[in-house]
Image (cartoon, rainbow over all chains, first blue to last red; front, side, top):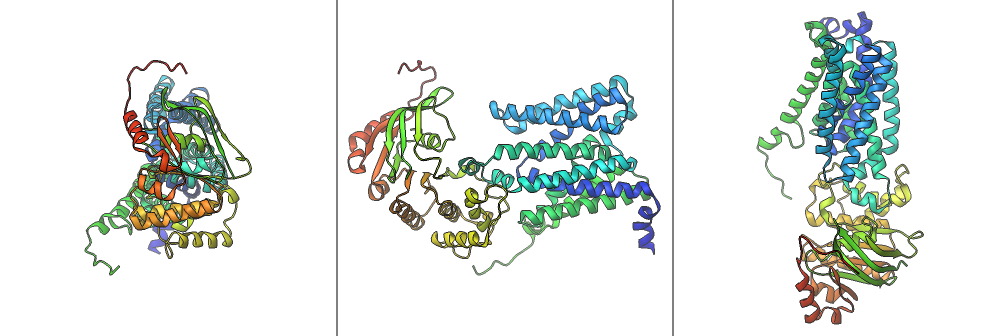
Length: 290
Length: 243
């Protein structure tokens, strides 16, 4: 019964906890597979840049409508897509590489976003936008998050092979006339969409947490990309579940609790994972005969 | 069969020509090596033929390109070797012309991919992941993918770099087989002895076409000396080409 009281009763007793958990499930299923591709494409930091890029749009919507789901979502979406597009154009047409062009774009966005909020709002508004609040998820935002997850899973299924081949061997993709660049742009759009979806729960600063931390942790447990995606979803959901409980029992802010739990999964994987972890590095192994 | 016409082709980077006013023709079904010193424009020309670079001037015509396939093997550097993928899956991407981005990889295709692996001497490697292959094994796996692509025009850019003699011989045999099957093959290569032994045609390149034809004649001491003369002759502020 202790286990029940600790781990399940909060979700049974309180609607806001249930909604938070379902929201996290949606975010895990939508975001974690994209995180795997971000990591494999060496774009984890680009993901970070994107998560800041949505800020000006959210801020402008906040100026116009206050804290309101739809305008802030649309604003974030438009800003994120514009920044992704602009950074993509700079990457393709100039000598700057992707990391540099995205960093340029995100620093501009972050500064602009904070400036815009500060013009009208107070520091509590700023905190809300930067860090979110998963416990305040209501029916509408839950529907939106589930919708975005459904859409992005379907879209990912369609571009899956293109994305893998484009990621692994872009030269081959070009030579067979595959639409690698389109798959890449679509993928970036999905990333933006999921970051916007996660923004209400975790804020712009930590939306990337449930997307990328489980993915880099999963890398240590398998060499098969399909299984890697499954593990990252599992990690993301477990981290959310545990994080929510910690937040409930010890009155911790939920976003950081979830992201820190995901971070714990990551640290454990770095130390003890099956492939390429610190443990495999140091444990004595007898070599095989061939 | 695919023939390729080069009509006064210039390909350049930042207006500096890497390939300068080249004309000529790769006949359908021929096996041609492209030789020349470093920086001679060999890879640039092959990228132009593959359609990755556009000529600044002149035209590259690929006859029958709409009906037949082109396979291009770039220099190894572009490939992310630690990607979590099995050897069989990598070879099966060669079926892109049949599957596209969403089509199913059928059991028949898998069987063909396994046969291709056997043909390059990698039997039993299907389930290995790419990261575990040596450079030479990886190059063989790429040849297996070329086999699966079943293309009429095959472009190879220094395919034997970091490959041992035995493997090179095996891969050369595959290239000869493609030639026997009347496919058009163009291969960038440094080893002049290999070219003389295995290639009926050679294009000796040093930004411009120095010689083109039978290696016995095209690779003479005079042509090789004039190719070496062009090496690395780069000017910071050249004049605009009037041709």
